[in-house]
Image (cartoon, rainbow, N blue to C red):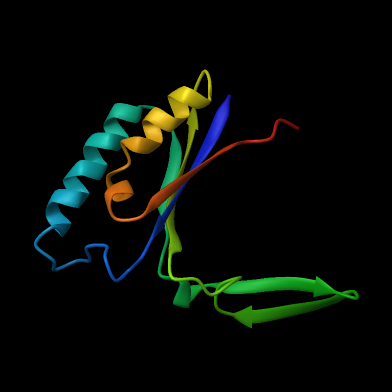
Length: 111
């Protein structure tokens, strides 16, 4: 079964390029990604780069910015294959940014 790991971070506590912890964080992500093996995933840009699209009464509404304003924002994701939720939770606990933010685990719906 596939699970999506949605990584949420608070930019005020998460290392950024230039911070002393940044290089180690990137090394930790490289090791984590290698350990996962096969996966789909990517980091996301800052929410200020987001554009939100809504259709209301047949009209397309385009708004600059994220869907909702929150302290934490989704900074990346992985879609992984696991036998069960327990395996997915173990993988989520190994996401390097979990120590700065949170990782939401959700099963991917089978269609």
